[in-house]
Length: 436
Image (cartoon, rainbow, N blue to C red; front, side, top):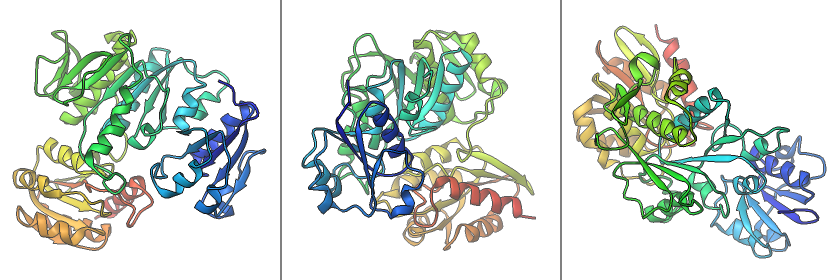
């Protein structure tokens, strides 16, 4: 593919858009970047890019481009993109653009929850096996930045969100990982089926030579690739774990308790998926065990902050949807005081109620959905509603007896009060460390 002389219009001046711009420039294109933000958002833009701050749909409708590259934070099917797409040859995303100029192998990873941990595990194993494995896409760096390196890695560990998958055309992972599926992003998608359809695009360019690593029971359509299964409930799956050891072909491949700091069934699933993906690329069990020795999960994913007065404080701020919240609750072995809440995303939280009855002593809700969430949760446990995370930590501490766990697992996104789940988790960590 050549971009020489072509006009590449990019929507979004963030890191993804800038990476796409640099790659397009390297390939000889004329590049423009459009963003609704002001000029400050364009500071440090690569030389040669024509910038358009305060861009409007009316302007977009007049623009002629060969390819329109849409950043994942912008609604692909919204009126803004539709205007810019009126006179373009093709609408894709930065991940698809990068894939067209990458010569190595792709491990593509998707799922409603667990993507980032699995992506990091794949990267760690492949790096130890001297295959590269750079984490990129929805986690790590933009894929285009990896492609721009002087010596790109032989394999990338590519985390793919539904937003990124919407705009793929030719992207071809030799290994795909489907972790799980649950309703999410209902503030962007009109139906659950539309969200699922975006996720399923990860499989569409695979062939019979490729591998699809799939959680047992996921009800997927017939796949062209060779299917490898993993499970924590079905010991006939190709990979099985009861939460402490990982078994493959009747042999223990990893002892999670002894070799890693990974705990809980959800982390066992992530680890099995990563190991299955790397085995498909020829990595041995010995190399995997060496790579994962001493591994601790990333911050904000059931991260143990501290134990104070016999109470554990867990930061699971990455739980930005129902499925993640349910997984965190299900994995707990101590009585829980749950802290949940944040942005209204149009989700139905009634499925959490039975788990609260089983796992929780009490709940504290905060943020935009604090009051309706408290009204629902109070049918299962004692529940208090507060406005801020600071207040939530203080109330939760007063409700948590020795031997219990205070679990921040919000169950929704953070954008009502924070810039992202990282800032929310860091704030929780700071608040907990300030307790005396």
